[in-house]
Length: 284
Image (cartoon, rainbow, N blue to C red):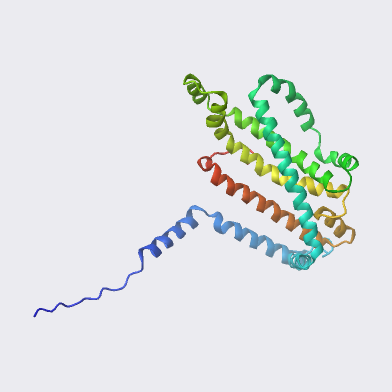
């Protein structure tokens, strides 16, 4: 009876793990920002932490990052801080939705009808040149010290970047494609849905990206003028108390809010306008 000798081959790592390690190395080479961004952050924080002691800057003028972290940790454990955060978030989001919605409607209307554009654009440009921060005292007088004045401020500041991007995006549609669809008998609504709107999506998301950050700015500015709650109000209170570390902590929270909103907009853009990932739009 014949016997067969089983030869055990040396174990080899799975192909998937090898491919994964190669991909990780390629990512670090092709995307140096994956390690440059945290490296720059570490260098800046360490230089700030120990540079203040070397230069001799007073802590009540420029606190160390460790002091800012301690102040932020104390505030995160305070229920009143979360109340201020919720108020500012509510003002910014509601104002953002109102401003973006109005800009989408008006921008579409202006871009489709030439006579409307010729009539309204001079007024829009004139109003856009007015510093929006200067309108905050008027909004407080008109709408009071509650949420309404801050929502209006956030809506006005986020309105104009969105309006400009909507108009420019709808104008950027390919004329050859529009002419071809016109020859085949497509209606204006079909041309808008199949050509103009897809071409405008990168511009629209650029306006959303700018508008959400401006909405947070508008809410905080409105709270500076007159408010009893919100992160802007908290900033003023820490300033009156010479709590500079507390001011930096609130600024860190506002920065995180802006970054989170930016990444949400980018995530939605990747899902909705995935074909326009490489499109470079000014202001995005």
